[in-house]
Length: 566
Image (tube, rainbow, N blue to C red; front, side, top):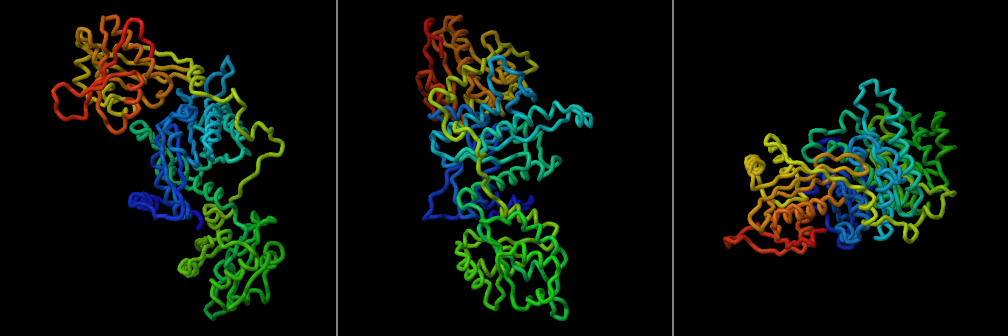
């Protein structure tokens, strides 16, 4: 079956509900393991991608990785993504997150590449190592809002992202098992006015509307289907519904819009595609005195035609047999819903493409259903190094990535009036947090309590200024430093921030003659990253002293003056 067209809002809702109910079992077919890594929340993509591919006969097992950790996940073969063992890796970066201050980084004096190039190279290398195919989504150009209509003249604002995008496109195109999708095409199709959700992004790092997630999933599904089944090798045109229409007296005449059929089929005029026409005898009168459009169709486009009285199922069977093309490699284009139902009820393996009544919409409808999709070969002049894994010793590693960040952390004590924003930051942080709930009043008390220390942590690296991205709150009790608050925001997670902050906690503890750093923890279901990090500190786990059943527990980290490196 083809990939259905891009749905509207109601269609997207139906797909979300269908995904919640669960897909159809495919006992004889192993689901395709698809891992999605993005710089923002990509979970809304899953129900659309899953249902599109299920309908195309490609069951999937999707997994979405942690937010904004593409490079970290790709360069580390012990990462969650590597453990998932994907068949297909989908990487979706956005300039807005890669450039932390919204602008491209200044030219790097040490020759480090732009973040997008770094992400692309890490993704390609990971896909080769893991034996996976890669779909890399080129990011859209960030909208220029700073100057209003004056931005129309701001060539510099477009030149940088455009040049970087095209450089990455050229860098990846033609590599084996590497495919490209373009978010700019998705945004253009939806329309900028209907694409963005800035308020939801601030709340949940969801930058786009459901229309964008649905359209992107649709584009990705077309790539996956194309990779699995290839381009269509035969197209059968239902001449009765597309070329003509019966009059009141039963006589057939050429329908309005018939002149659009030839240019519509021109992209399929290739050596590897056979285009045939199917008519019932009732409509055969159209060819008694053919119009110039029909003559052009017959002489320049069609490979053959069939006019007979048998059922459409029989006609399709005969045509595919005559052309020696498998039904699944054949598309049937019709404007007749009854014909589609008849073929579907008969179990036809052909792709049934139902177009609407308006000829003006046919091009877009058929493009959405993938009729014109074809995998482009790489340029013949591409250097051999572009088509395989990197040379030994040149691949990005987690150590190289961290060393190249040139991380800078700043620490300051917040004012009491900042407790509200810190409480909100704690509420929104899910992946790296101790899980202990603290109210605004709790945080205000800790800021003003002389036996406690609260620190806000600002983060800078070579990609820009990330602002306040981490926070800690500790209480001093004789030789024990108790940590109630330890959070790191997703955009800087996996960049060494958590290790640097833990080391700072240890240094402060030693200054106060503490030999134990005690972390109060609670399992939330989403803070596994935090618990794994504490395990790497060789902490001692034990339950709270009151003996009550609880999801809360304590981790003790023994430190000494000679052991404060994390």
